[in-house]
Image (tube, rainbow, N blue to C red):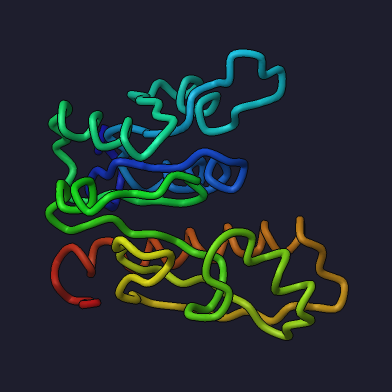
Length: 192
């Protein structure tokens, strides 16, 4: 699984369309040991993008619906990865899960933290009329987007940006930051 990949294996946590596109880009440079995502709802007819992508490329998949299920999964599974990557997951991660990874879990959040913590920062940055936004990489902790910051990078919001266009720009920026940050962070060259 690591053949041709520049970054060591990670466990990926993500569920929505932003997570799916992010995972698609990550797969070009980061080995993914397993994907943890939300299950397909029983009566759901739409897409479940992370699950569908992971199935398509043959990744090991685990599904959880709650913090309790996530705790039980991590307790019963021995992941080899030293770190996780979390993007657009939608489930609060416990300290027990965080501590199961020697180097923690890196979250890519689509705002310049501490500005716009929580859900839907892209919509809020446009609604607020912000002239800039960006991507913040951080180590998750038990709070909501309160972990120790790793690199951040800003981009301008153009007057023509929509939520969709800004989302795509931020996904690509997030991927660039992850490419630049993972190996130096794991080697102790970047500290939180």
